[in-house]
Image (cartoon, rainbow over the protein chains, first blue to last red):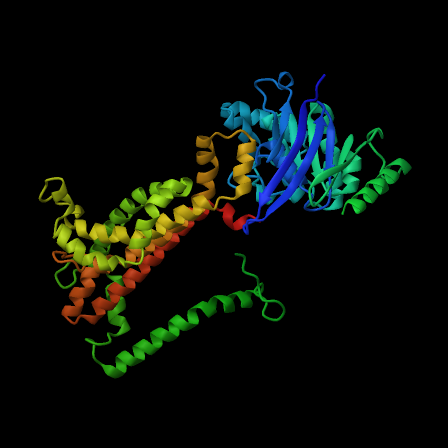
Length: 251
Length: 290
């Protein structure tokens, strides 16, 4: 069976205001199977966010192509959506209206979309703050709401751009567990960008390591440690060190 | 913005501290009034500097007849009607045009040269033009009626025109600014969640730009109110707070003149505060958002 998403030789060239051309991505080849949890890891400036934005359709690739296996994505449900690092909630809407936003865009009547949104909020552990405004929530709760909203869009692939990058460690760990639970329950495909090795090893089934100048893939590692993973186990720490070595060589 | 109490000794939390902080905002106004009254007493010339008591007497009896032009309250209401009418026209025209300019680069390129050309012109510079253009035409005459026996009889088209120019640029430019500065992340998020162009405009761009639009409306109303004096200097005007100022000057009734000026200040303050309350209710999130 062909993969759900296939990136073939993706390249991206930016021109600076001075007219110089900078290669942000070169020859990126990635295959994503349905239901995989993939992590893209790399130093700042390696183009991991750019790659995610190309998949999302927010940027166009300068070279290469993206192949999507059509018959796996139902005609009614969209292919992918993106969760940003922070501040993506609409401050003029409360939490439930934010969560129901993609349903509103789809034209679902108010009563039923509010009901559906409540279920998604429950799923991310955010029941009880439906009427709060985003700025009344902590950073962790805001990201939970952003995830609930992305889930409400019901896309096949969840693209996540350092979604826990602005959170403290405890909160980050809790959200990682929530995300794994959602991934298991909802059978989503997740592409998760991070620069945190621990996060990538804890979450992903497969890690793509990237290097900068030009942005490129240097290694992919499949992780078979069963979940929930113990951060202090030998295989976990060994993997952590291995990835760190790759990143240091890449930098 | 949050105001923070000064640290340490000058604690704004204690009752005495609060009294003292509040008192600070009254020190200079009271000093000003005292100096005024002292000068009035020394000069002893009510045609130059009227006594405070005379001014206050007019202000506390706003419904009493003044120098044959109606009461202070009546003239204020006439002015308010004129300002609100001219200002409403400015809102009705400028908000949609500003929205269009903010959304479409093409429309912005088409309209912006005109905006840049006329912007440096103070609304008062339009008075001679308005006089030539509209003469003393009143609003009812536009509809073929000579007199309606309503307050509209005292609203000249030329006045509306000048007040309109007062409100135009703040409203237009703030609307354009508000629309073109909607945060990219909100637009991209909406796009990633399946928003069509129309829904993106209605449910993201409009609410995100609303605080800026309301600020423009508030500043615009302030300027419209300021130019009322100029608008009421048009020939054929026989009422309004601006007219009252000019007329009391001609009769050397300084107490009425000063009372009218105070009235203009008070009304301006009230309009501003009123709109501030409305806009805080509608878009309170801007102040609270991190």
